[in-house]
Image 1 (tube, rainbow, N blue to C red):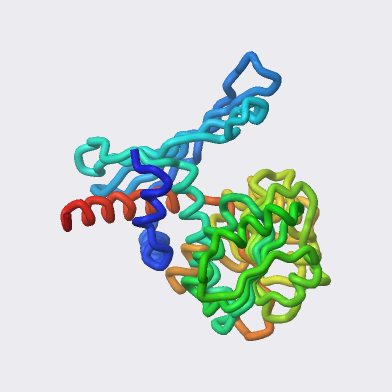
Image 2: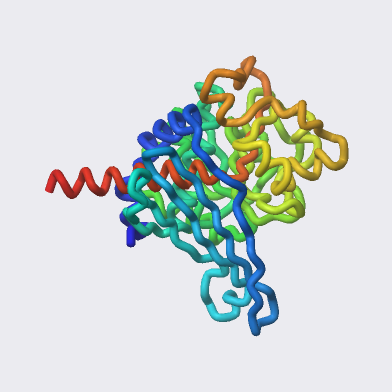
Length: 316
């Protein structure tokens, strides 16, 4: 079992971002994930998600994750899982990996990959909205693609925000917690949101010319991190049309309300990486990227992790 600590040690963000760029360019086979309801004796129904992807003659991968909401009362994570990687030529299992750690690492890399096309090249001020396990990953990933000099972290709990800040020892940038979200948004070059918000936190009238807004939370159609005015003012991109338009509230809700048409979405990560769609078109443009997550990202990260582990073992 490849642990989260091992994944962090071998999946260096700059390397993962570049590998993901190449994978989006070439593409993978990724059937629609299957979600199955699982009856329990608890208060809430549980679920099992099966998300496969493969590259012909290279690798086959599948993420198996469970969601047991009643685990919170038992002081256990509600979501748990594993990622299984198979050899694409023989079907022989190659590795099992910590799915939660893999997902965090690849999610941050996907946001940074999008920012390499959408955020201004001179972006120095990063605001991270959210204080969960993904927040430090996003900071690290953005620092790999932009010359970040100042980072602010905002959360509903100031103590949790300070905890995120304390995880960085002698970084190359200045990092602080803030309790003034509007002020922080107005002063940032890049705003990355990774929350479980059900109602919008980011207001469109706070946005400034030239900013890039990255929405990582809002993982169900009912959840939102940014209001409709953010959508109206931005050039909008997604990682994948299917996931964002159907499963992500920040895109699905504006589509349903007529605030956004599908044709208004400027492109996805495959189109950006292949040069089929231009990213940021001018300096003062506001750009928005909605991350819904794709099986391609999981497969890409798992492949690279296993390759690096094998390479490191060979060197020993």
